Amino acid sequence: MFGFNLGAPKTQCGLVIDIGSGSVGCAIVVSDVDSAKPEIIWSHREYARIKDMESTEVPLQEMTTLLVNTFLHIGKNGSTQLRERYPRLQISFVQATVSAPWTYTITKTIQFTDDQSFKANDDLVEELSKTVERKILAEVLENDIFKHNQLEIIDTKAFGVQINGYPVTNPRDIRANHLAIAHITALTQKRIVDALTESVEKLLPKSTLVTHSFMYLFYDVLKNLNPDTAEACLIDVTSEATEIGIVREGTLMHVTNVAFGTFSLAREIALACKIPKEEAYSCLKEGMSSLEEKLSKGKVAELHSILEAYEDKIVELFKVTGDALAIPKILFLHCEASTEAFFVSRLMNASKKATTMRHSIHPITSLFFDTGTTGDTGLLLSAHFFHREHKKIAEGTA
Image 1: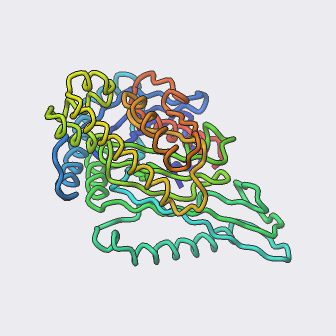
Image 2: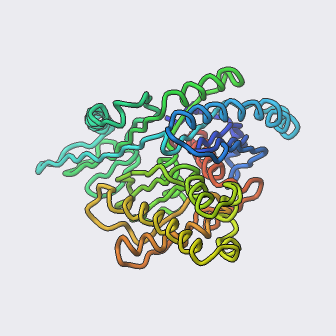
Image 3: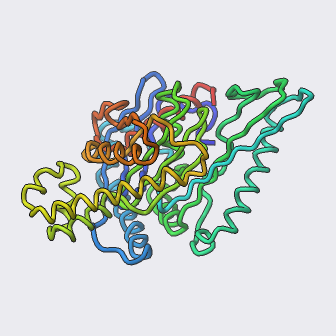
């Protein structure tokens, strides 16, 4: 459950937190059931420094520091904005999302078929959901990644039910021969969960905290905004990671990631071109042409090799999804709005290398959102999810 109680008020105020691989964003969101979209009245993002990394220990420690600093801004600046705009409203819910590589999102679908028709209802869905949850946790315990990391479950639930091949929201004694349940389990670094929980308890002790994997939220929002898309590849590029999710028949089926993102690229470009890391990062936003004009032919070739190596990493992601089919032809990209043009080009090349086919790539920010108060893509997605969940509970349709 999202955390809202039945009979939630018409207007709800929440704090959304977006924990990326190298930054933490936050926004105070006001949701009114009569409004088509939420109102973001204040937002802020804290970024880690672009520096060399030898292990995940140092950046993980830096992420917890960013989280604490973010809450200091919320208490000082965000609360002031809320009082000025809505003096009677208080933040009652905190919705957090955590991206790869800090979060591992695992999906699995369980099938139940019988020649004789049976009643598909909530009890059967719950029973099968617990079965698939146990299977996922058993696989988690056997995986070396999870053995060597202190992880905590932040989300485990059924998120899609199909009866006789048709999606159903509330199965209530429907006669069926085939039932399919999609289940998600998300695990996050315990240090991040602890820092988040402690910060919320200090600043907003009466609020309800709900945490999701970013890929699940990305999928859920996209499904709502573009319900007719049954097959798609979701791509999330953050500072230190690139994560993809494969959607088949409207359900998120496979999720995988590589610990390489915008900061990672900036480090390699800076080293090869002998420029500051911050300048290399700016080139990802503004385009490579200005940088190439300053370089010798040899350095330009080296730069192109770095970009091709990143494309090859994406090709490998496209091939190790656990899906026997080639990636879908439609790709939805989430990244910083300023880097969309750069990554569209890289993904276009990578997808063609992987499948030899031409793919359609849609940057979701420019496709779905009027940036308005904030151009922060992660916070826009989070605010939309918060608003929709509030409306569902307030209207009794959850």
